[in-house]
Image (cartoon, rainbow, N blue to C red; front, side, top):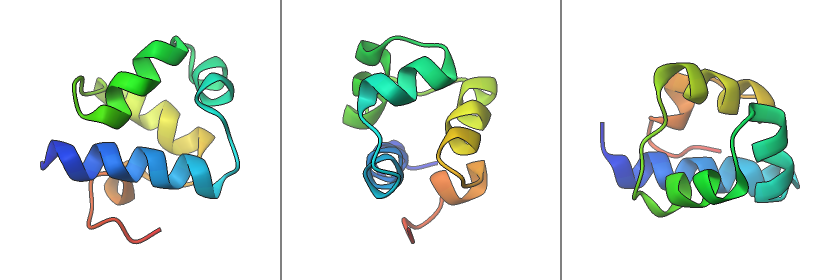
Length: 70
C-alpha cells in the first residue's frame, strides 16, 4: 500500500462528498486531528477505521487504497 495515495484518496473522496474533516471525523468516531493526520500520510487508519471512512464517503476500502480514481 502506498500511504501517500491512501492519504490523497481520503482527502479527494472527502472533498467530493462535500464533507469537512470535522464532519467526517464525527461520522467515523475519531477526532478531526486524526483525519488530518490520515490525509497528510502521517498516520495510517486501522482496517476498521478505513472501513468506516470508506462507508462514510460512499466508497470502498479498495478504492481508498487504489489508484485514486474518484
